[in-house]
Amino acid sequence: MNTKTSNTELVGKRVKMIKMIDPNPILPNTEGTIIYVDSMNHYHVKWDDGRTLAILPEEDKFEFLD
Image 1 (cartoon, rainbow, N blue to C red):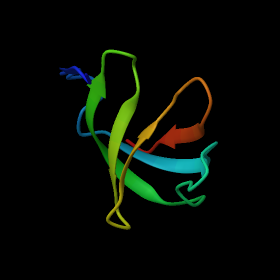
Image 2 (cartoon, one colour):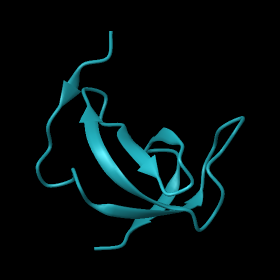
Image 3 (cartoon, rainbow, N blue to C red):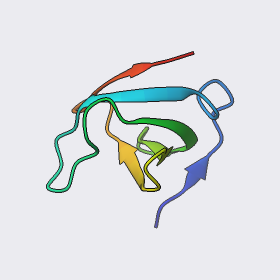
């Protein structure tokens, strides 16, 4: 079960992907908005390309835009 936890410091923040370790990754330079942070501290993002996929901060390379 995936437990959603509201993290007011991160929800709504804009991010840009640099490199994702995933079989079907978000492409570099794709931007998106964090919609929630789960109990494992994965940042679930609504990407501007229409996809929704989590960032794993300990594995993926990304940057905050704001």
